[in-house]
Image (cartoon, rainbow, N blue to C red; front, top):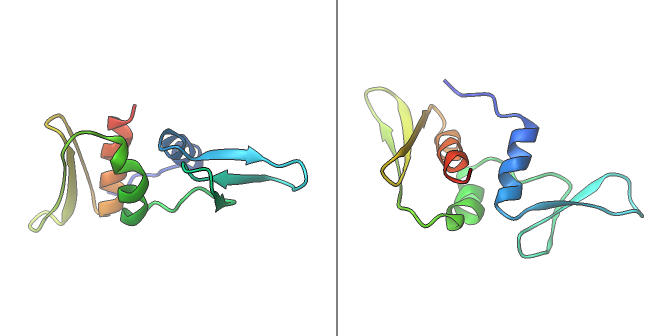
Length: 103
């Protein structure tokens, strides 16, 4: 059930959360800056629950619920009353719901 999430899609998502790619002329490639302006690394954050709750969830002002359906073996992430996404991986379910909410 896990959906393919491309690098470009992740980049758009993390940029909505305040990350940005910075081209430093003295280096080859790009560096990533966190929303607070500090250096993060050369890649955007991993897609995991820790990073989602640290950087993406604070961008919302809606209640979030994430739970596992035991019988069906999938996770559901709900934001407010209207956005609901499911996946086998809880981080992916939350990402999909947050991506929709941050559009």
